[in-house]
Amino acid sequence: MRKTCLDMVAAMADRDPRVVFIGSDLSPGLLAGMKEKHPDRYHMEGVSEQHIVGMAAGMAMDGWIPYVNTIATFITRRCYEQVAVDLCLHDLPVRLIGNGGGLVYAPLGPTHQAIEDIAIMRALPNMTIVAPADAEEMKRFMEVSLDWPHPIYIRLAKGGDTVVTGGFDRFAIGKGYLLREAAGGRDAPVLLVGTGIGSTRALGAAERLADDGIACHVLHLPTVKPLDADALLELARPARLVVTVEEHTTIGGLGSAVTDLLVERMDGRVPRMRRIGIPDAFVRRYGGQDDLLADVGITPDAIAATVRDALGGHGVGHGDAHG
Image 1 (cartoon, rainbow, N blue to C red):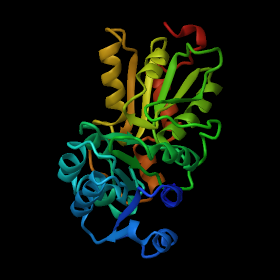
Image 2: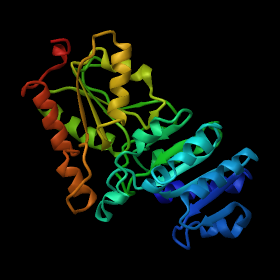
Image 3: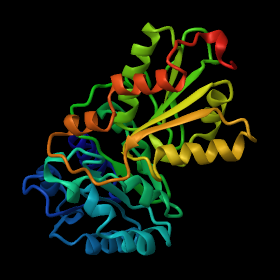
Image 4: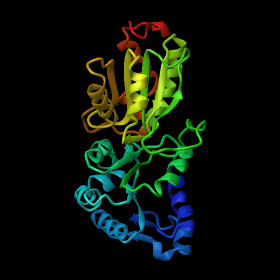
């Protein structure tokens, strides 16, 4: 996914003279073709995240569209004040590309595990947050990112992720996509809501639950901010259970955003909810991304088990949505 994203930056730079790439101490050969063709619009700075955000802000004020790339924890935690004051306060069209959202860099420990990046970026006025599920969706998103007038935080997954959005030919910032519609129509008893690879895991859970007679919609929200309120409300109103799935702490991320919306807009008729994500703790165990995701229950089997438990341990057919 990272390669796809950065290749798109280079391709857009070929046709739009406003596009600039700024990196922070990344691989020497990264986007070598762009560096050769557009040396005045390719900047590889040192380990200086505060500097590159300020640099990008200044360039945006002069009419450029900077795409800034480094590890997710560095482009969020390390330069948070600059992101808030230099970018968001002035509502500038800078795109922050964070490598390794969630537990991608699991073997490098908590310093590199971006488990709270969505929460802290979501708190900033004017910030847009996008977490595509796969490389194909990344291509569609990058095309529309060019003319979005606000700052964007782009959360990258590991790469090589299963393509689950191949049935769509467009991307609209702020819109969700129904990856799976339950048999029987729109009024399914369970709504699974995901972002990034959380949507992929939710899709796997829905397939397992279908074998038990439990009908689930799977709503993919690649844009965490702004949320697609219309899609969420339409699918949540008839649901008996809403489950959010994200590779992020359960505090302040997708689950919190969905909960806030439903509490505010459903007038006391909020369905039962479960938020699946990383617990409120730094990960202590050593292992790869999949190992740690399994530890915290972000797998299709664990998600399906959470749904069964929330429903009382028995299957629920389409007709029991309001039971």
